[in-house]
Length: 316
Ligand code: FES
Image (cartoon, rainbow, N blue to C red):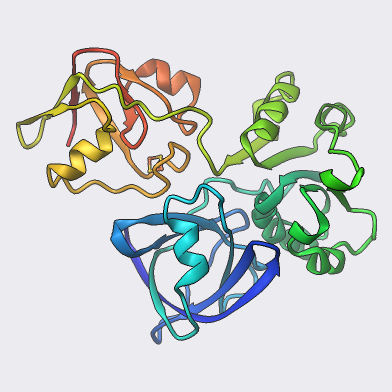
């Protein structure tokens, strides 16, 4: 991970279970610029890395702001973020990376967010305001108490008509994603970030649209990781061969053997652990590669995917 040292300036409770973190540069160098939709990979104790969208206006060059939802099933990342960091702490981070870029020339950008999935759209809305471009946000939360950034969104919503909030526990319904997609004007771009059910509905609803108009970002896996084991992996560069045992992922096996491999989400959504495949057929379980890329079998996300053949050869 090419690195930055960030200094935590402040934490703020944004909603029930959601805390934001404002980081500034820990040294004299200014923070690298970022584009709307970008995230940073924070390095947490125990070798954990977690990806968090940058929430603030990309025009604000002096800080990075992220928000973290305390996941009920946290595997360590959000639980640590909610309990340990204090103002003045330093955290290592990647430079900003953008896998969810904003198409800035669209006449209208339509955002559909579920819960903490609103975070990249905060930066996108701010950027579009700077450009004088129109946007709309459909924002679904379980309850008003769980709705982060409501005040900030009303400030960003200059027309007063751009934000639709849906509290699913308060009889305010859910966004009708099929209707939103059907009603999207020609040339508009559609974006979705939220839980898997929402993303699946969005993907189905957008099936008839030109793919370049459709953008989504997952923050959790849609499939279980492959842990059946029973195959071997040969590392072409070192000549090592490792057996992948039942109950372990390929990433577990590589890390146990001391193979230095970069990873972040551990869920097949970020692409950090992408590894070239030289032989064998991966059992692709990720949400990062396209169907065409999966069919080509030239890369594997080792954090979650396994093998359909008795042997895989990787270019590491
Ligand atoms: S670590 Fe994110 S896809 Fe594997």
